[in-house]
Image 1 (tube, one colour):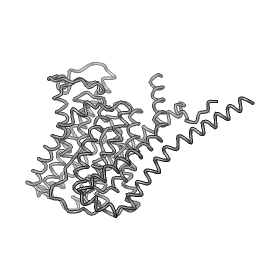
Image 2: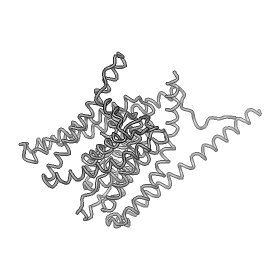
Image 3: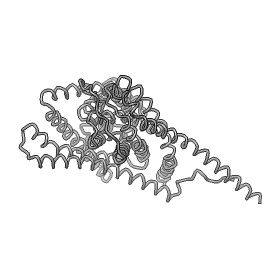
Length: 365
Length: 96
């Protein structure tokens, strides 16, 4: 859900890289994996695309610019696909929208303050710590919930209401009914989730990793509706971000178009795959990806501490930790994408075996 | 004999329908390819507009929307049979 604003004072033209066929193929692949994850659980493209493009030699700001512009169109196609399947609660999108922007602006101000006070290493450290704490908390809670659900199914003894149950039941007026999401909840809670998601989007650039679980657990929205609604919000934040970066002259249109070649296929396969899986499987992929990304960021923390002089680390050890961090980052996306593809093709094979696949060219004399 | 004739006519009708069904995605695919060719082959021409920034959104947004509309529809067209198959399969599965 990130809608970062390009840093002011960066008006000089960026170098647009030469695109060779191997680089083009990598970009299409990055787009496909990012699209697959976004289509399946509403978020997950940005965290591999930006570092992936930077790895190809694209300047950081141009990578973010291309990613955010690409996100706008990808969210548009994904949200339409999910809406077609009845998975987007437009009312919820509109309710969370303003709070989301306020949260993003708040995070950008805090980030700028930290950058001024502690420099780039301090800013990297702050972002990484936020990543580790929040994503670990999300993965831990969701993992616990998945295990608990499994146990509840086996033994139907009910435990008392959890903290999240109590928060959900605090129906402070105005209380709004969201028909598509099938939830009746205090508007204040919706605004709080929007603010939190926006804040994290502005801080770590992937608010959806927290926004989708927050919708599932705090607002009691089904995972598939949370994914569709998240994509609905991403249209607006993507458009805003794309406009800001385009005005700054940081958008390389060729990168955006190459990402689309993969992502518009991936996002539709991801959305269709949600039909073939159970709610718990969607949550399982979120837990898996979020947990591995948290490990990836945790590995990078000592390197940033060493940059700030708080930890003595050799150049080799620093390089090793950053490489391991990148391996985990790409590994999380690859693992998630493989799982989604396996379920998608399993469903297709099942459909073929049970003759559910009816040819368009059936002859009716 | 009449039955065979009717069957052949049916096949022919179905085949014509199939070709007609393919016309739209083929047309969309050609349109997408044209947009990509224009951007990649004429990149040196549009680069000053992209890097200066002021008019960049006016160039970027229409192209992004065009590509998403054309390419998104083409992909959706080809994935539709798979989606329907999964729908039927999951519906049968639920009934069972």
